[in-house]
Structure formats: C-alpha cells, structure tokens
Image (tube, rainbow, N blue to C red):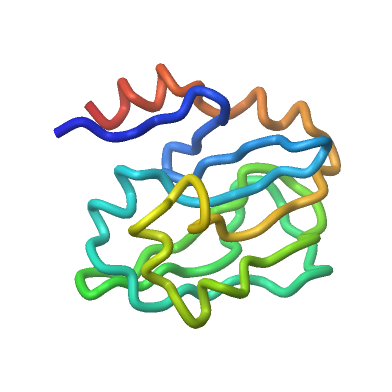
Length: 127
C-alpha cells in the first residue's frame, strides 16, 4: 500500500509531521499513522499557551483500535489548537495533512526541525 508523504514537511519516527509556516510549526499525524489507527474517535490536545519540549508527549489520539501518544516535533509555545477535531476527530482520517492538523507551535529553535526525518527517510521507515 502506498501512503501520501508530502516532502514539504519533516517527520518523527513516532509518525507526527511538522510543517514550518513563517516561524510557526504546524503539527499533525501522517497518512500512515491514521491508517494504522483506523477510525479516530477522540483527540486530546494541549491548551493554547502551554509549553512543549521536543519529543515529549503532548496529547493522545484514540481510535476504535488503539490509543496512541502524540509527541512534539519541536520545543515551544502552543499558539493554536485545531478545535474542529473535538467535534470531528474523523478529520484526522479524512485529511491528515490538511484539515486534520492538530496544533501550531511557536518554535523556540526552528533548527530542531533539522533533527527530524525528511520525507524520503520517513518513507524508508514505513516501507
């Protein structure tokens, strides 16, 4: 099976993606991750203003099959949370790289993104 892996973002081995947009890092989970989870029924996310540390747990995504922890791709302050997911968690399945995004972080150090997997490296991991 082939999964969508946009090459404009970086990836964690734990299947989160990070996309830098004007100094802010938007975060979600990959197409592979949402497929492995199955139908997402609940998403627990931090509050705006919370401080995250790279690779620390920031929330949970729950599906009919499993509960998975979510990990921060960069350190910084949460500046936005996708409130749509609380009423429509299935957006994570329907559009993991678009409407299914989870949060935005104002990165303390954007160079932390360089520590993450490129799209090619991530594709090798999930192959």
